[in-house]
Structures are given as structure tokens and as C-alpha cells.
Image (cartoon, rainbow, N blue to C red):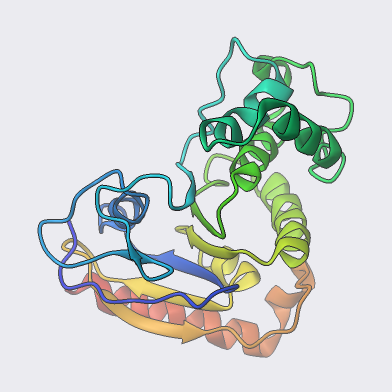
Length: 233
């Protein structure tokens, strides 16, 4: 449930939403993706209403949703093909990007043959192959172990730096938000509102050593304080 949420993302920004479970982060993503109609208010993508208009963004939900009966390459191209990209073009682009996404040699693998991190990279490749400037990522690393998540943080920063699409990213992990984002929005408990907007000033690329930086520690403490305040309603 959401209540009077007002937030914006500038073109080319990487913006994260953090907040307690059930506050409406995923609901907001589904509204922006055109999959859920809000009771009131508007949702726009590049100035166009996304209400009841799926297909304006590339959207990756919490689960990878790979089809077990499609090999990796066929899974990667599915979203692009649905968006109208000719099959030959989509497959050529996917093949070219498999090495960039750390999947070289696994084009014909079944999803069950891939590790958790590889499945997430494949799902992200599928999302990035969709020809839209805005990408919505709903807790894509939530099910991964800590070591794999760090690897995915490094990898996603590299991919995004090359691509520079507009990204809205949902996470429960404050450190993850600070490592990846230009801006972090903190939400309150249900019904979700925007508690605070926090700009992230650190240069890129951002490695794991950043978490020990004094300014990082201070900013993390501020975000945690805002989350605690938001929990009070």
C-alpha cells in the first residue's frame, strides 16, 4: 500500500528504493511497469503515462522467472522478441553480450544447469536486451549469498557504466543501495511514503573497500536512522 508517494528519477541516474517489507516498493515498480493501476495519482515514464500501459520500461521482478524449457540464449532473447525486436537481431545481440554478462560458453545451458549468480545475470541480460531507456530491477540480488552479491555489485556497475540507462532499483540492503546508487529514497512502513531522499556523492567505480570509508559509514548511519524514523510511521 502506498500513500502520497512523490519521487522522480533523472535520465541516466541509478536510483534505489529502500524500506521495510510490505511498504509498497514492489507495488510502485508494478505501477511504473504498467502492470498495476493506482487508485489515484499518476505514474509517468519519460513524460508518458505508464498507467495500464505495459511495455514502456524493461522490468525484472524479484524472481528470475527463467523458463526451464528454454535454453539460456532463448531465455535471454524472450523479452526483446516480445518487444518487437526481430528474432535474428535479438539472438545476434544476445550472443555478442554473453561474454559481457559472464555467460560465455553457456548459450545452450538449461536454467537448472546455472548457478544462482549466473541465473541472475541471465535474467538481467534478458532485461537489458529489451529496447527501453528505463530499467526497473526489483531486488534482483535478494536471494544470493554475500560473496555472490558483492561480485554482482561490481559487475552491475560495469554494465550500467557502459549502458547508462535510467535504473530504479529496489533493495532491503542499505550498503547495496549506497554502493550502486546516485540517489536513495527511503520509504516508511505501510502505507509507504517517502521518508527521505539521500544523494550519494562517491566516485565510481565503487569497490568493497568503500564500506570502511568514514563518509560511507556516516551516510549508512543516516539511512538507517531514516529507516528507523520511517518505521515509527
